[in-house]
Amino acid sequence: MGEMVEVLLPEGSARRGQVIEFSDRHTVIQILEESTGIGVRSTRIRFTGSPARIPLSPDILGRRFNGAGDPVDGLPPVLPEKWESIMGTPINPVARDKPSHFLRTGISAIDGLNTLVRGQKLPIFSGAGLPAREIAGQILRNAGAGEEGTGEAGGKFAVVFAALGITYREANSFLEEFEQGGAGGHTVVYLNLADDPTIERLLTPRFALTAAEYLAFDHGYDVLVLLTDMTSYCDSLREVATAREEIPGRRSYPGYMYTDLATIFERAGRIRGRRGSVTQLPILTMPDDDITHPIPDLTGYITEGQIVLSRELHRKGIYPPIDVLPSLSRLMNLGIGPGKTREDHRGLADQLYACYAQGRDLRRLEAIVGEEGLLESDRRLRRFADAFEREFIGQGPGGRSLEETLDAGWKLLRLLPKDQLTRIRVEHVLKYYGE
Image (cartoon, rainbow, N blue to C red; front, side, top):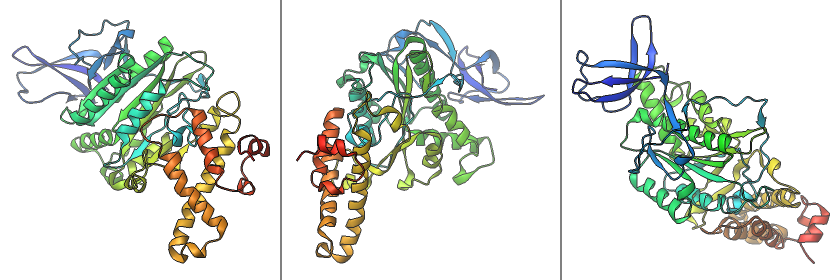
């Protein structure tokens, strides 16, 4: 299963295929390219004896490939240091190292309240028309710009970008982002565009992750993998499953979609005794903004949290429109605290979250009873929620250091009296709140 084959045509050309099913008498081959002109009697099949493999060397940095791993940047093929199967090898759970190093994104709603750590898989749940691409580009600009709080300044950093069924315009904007941000020299790009073969889309993330694992675990890079858009990947999985007449599951997606997504997302992590790491930042578009749709639902079970974009904040003109209440980073506590970020980080994040949640609830109450019906303490919390969205979340396209993020949080808390700060240690209130 999964063995690559060459489909030899009479005129001497060849096309690639993959074994997807076999029995005692027949073998079913999925053609990875155009099937036009392939005749049953005049076509020969050559089995390669191995699954899809990728040539790897440090020279892949700065290169651009199509979704099947072939160069599309006009440069010669990669001279391989090694060949590796794109299906990958599961990391031995005993050999996995616990992620514990803060990874800066420059976005306060993430660094302050949903901290990303190296080796984590943290998806971005977007909706049609929301600026997920701009946010991903902003993270890419800032992630390699500084390694503050990690204790590993000067570490090697690389980006692996996999485009899954996106338009040429979207792909081009990402490439421009890499070049303008100075990331082009340490970026590996795999492009499967909307008009490329559907079956190729199922291989593209595996090519990208194999390259990321090679850079991370063979050469010590901290690799940030950006996969966009995973919704296109899942739709391709459903299309192929339908063509194979497989029994459908929820909303016609195949029943094994959970397992298939896990084979992609679980390739993030760190290995004990090796310096590198693979951090995944998948982007998926929620159909009809429905977070209970099978794609975001299953993704949330596999990954370690999610960053959710809000259409309401986007309509208010707040950028980045990250809704911090449904967003979550399950590994946040491993990457923050003394010696990693700052001593007050955990308490400050808890207090900001609690006050913002109360302020959001009071908006609904205010719509019923009016502002005059609220207590003065409630009015403060409602004004805090407005200021939090405007000043903390809505930071604009620029990046913030972690110190600037935490200081912005304390500035907002000064809108409230000290006796309302119940989730922060007293010594931290005395040190950062002021008189």
